[in-house]
Image (cartoon, rainbow, N blue to C red; front, side):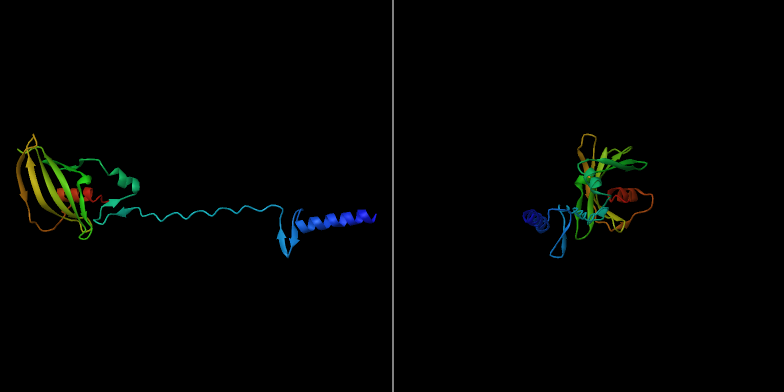
Length: 174
């Protein structure tokens, strides 16, 4: 009988010592049969920089908007009574220090002798100003008819003018 009691006590002691049942107090701490898996902490999402403006003030809604604007070639941005105005954003040059954007505009003429003109504009998107730096007129075969350089001052865009259309489209005013 002593052997049975001794065996039972040893078995109970082993169970308590090695934590083989439910929850057991070991050194004042509760131990459990299985370790609970820690929930993974969600990774902090990087702070979005969209919408954003380039150093020259060109607006982009998001990264997709920026990528969609690449490699599109000449796109119609507006028209006047005499011209269709086109712009190619891949030909833009931004001077981040002066915040001046150089942009080429193609005017396809409806009535003039020249088939089209290429005009280099400098734009200040943040202040809604522009100036014409140079222009070149071409015939229907692409031959240069004349070219001219300008030393003009900055002008504010007149509402509902071709200058305002150019500024709004090139600077992508939201």
